[in-house]
Length: 428
Ligand code: FCB
Image (cartoon, rainbow, N blue to C red):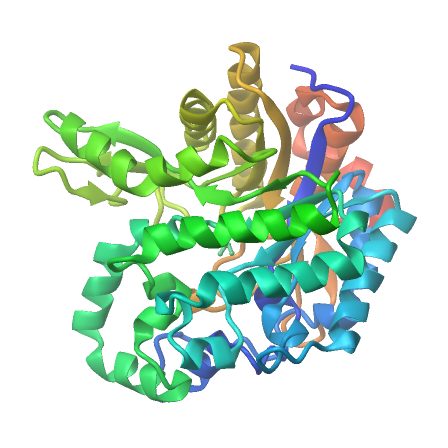
């Protein structure tokens, strides 16, 4: 179970979830609405806008070679056509800090949030969205695109398609929260990414990705560019085969088609979905399943299955850009990582071209509508002092990355902890 010498080993974050103070975004406005769809406010998040240097030092110290982060459009283009040189400089400093520690920067240009002016104007429902987004991508790429190791256009571009029924239920159940949110952003809730999966979205999203990819490529031709997709293992219960096929056709196929022309495809997997004879998808786990803090089925094997599906459909090289588990039990996190990587390794042995594995997430952070309760991080964050606490799973991933081998994953917790003593590990 060894990996190629240039295999990408990383951890991911997203701007809104870690930076703090992202007040010019639609998400901040929705969090501030009363009542709100969000259980709490992102506030200072992990204060990473100020502390990115410390976090990169941790990541490099562990032995990882790649940092996936996102660039916040709301900071870079606070008003239409008005670009902030200060914001561009900030992200350029992050990139410089990565390279100075031998870390490859992988930047995502859109991770769920829009600037308020974009939201006010209908966000994803506006036909001008693709051009607006591409103009921002072009500006960023001209500023420092050629210094990126990888560029991801839109994070989980197909997530709105997969969330459509769930969000319709949320709308029906919480009309007051939706109304307050709409008043706060000044537009229908479908303007916001997580609710955007309505008629017209898919075609507009594909077009957005393609314009963005071309814009980045024209400024930084040698930088690999791809989208990332939410791809879960899809399992048919008896009679559910047609449901699986229809779901994949609607939620995966249009993006797989576009990804065939990309340099890589980012695969992001968290669990298994099951389909009943009624054709409906459910993330509801089997009755005896172990559940994560998100209520998902504990299912590390889903990652290998998702990679095989994506490869069969696209033949485009894969980077696992997110895989992870929300749990307070770091031993379960280590087991999850080990098992997910066994699936990656088996898929590679079967011919699937996988170039890297990026764990979600580096830090315990703001998990969107669920707030700060779910802890996906390799590193804990004290919400009062912002102090970072490295967990044994972080040390384990670092050892796997340094050795390019899963051997390190077979160590006992004690051995992992003693290896981690040097980097200040705490068992939480
Ligand atoms: C993914 C998102 C990421 C994080 C994880 C748990 O859908 O890309 O920001 O919230 O789920």
